[in-house]
Figure 1 (cartoon, protein in one colour):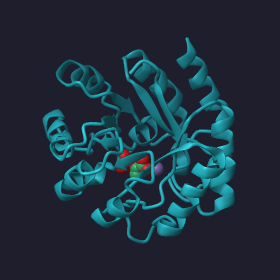
Figure 2 (tube, rainbow, N blue to C red):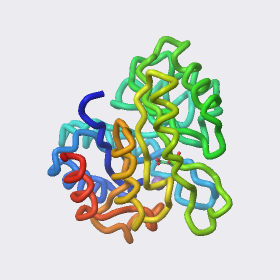
Figure 3 (cartoon, rainbow, N blue to C red):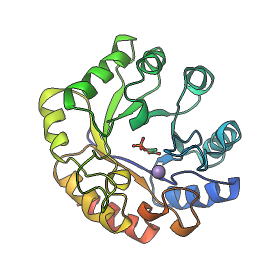
Length: 238
Ligand code: PEP
Ligand code: MN
């Protein structure tokens, strides 16, 4: 990839207005890809699970209205069948990296796929997961490092394995992007981790951003504001 793949947007959204406001700010900055989760894979079943089908309709409306490309997580075979060819990039979340039946279904689509690394996956397991998609005929795969489990995770949610960038570059032909938001779980770290990832050769970034992170229904501690995003974009131009 020559140009870096910059994807930004809310973790999730609770209304069309909220989604629109974030999307508008993303678009203003010349970013082409909007991330936003509507089928949320939450650790607790009692946490907000996303607006689901209703949210997907909102995402498709945003795509039409603002012309942004939509990157969103699909979590079931049924969702892939229904929405796989309507969105621009299918995101497979860390929790589903080992869901081989889902990966096989994604392999049947022609839509680009972001395959997130599971928090405890070795590089080899991650690459083999990609092969499940590839074997179905879809080789448009982008790997995404999003942080791994570690013994200090009480303080930082996960830890960014920046070495993954070098490993994937040396051993595969897949592009690799980094999600500094989930990796650190802390907004104040996201700018530095984004710059470090770009400096280490990452092909892009997947970042959670909001006009008012406090308002987010999910992951508010790790969501950056647009001023921070602007500094990251500035660095990326250099
Ligand atoms: C996300 O990007 O919305 C997400 C839930 O990330 P992960 O699957 O890496 O936890
Ligand atoms: Mn999130």
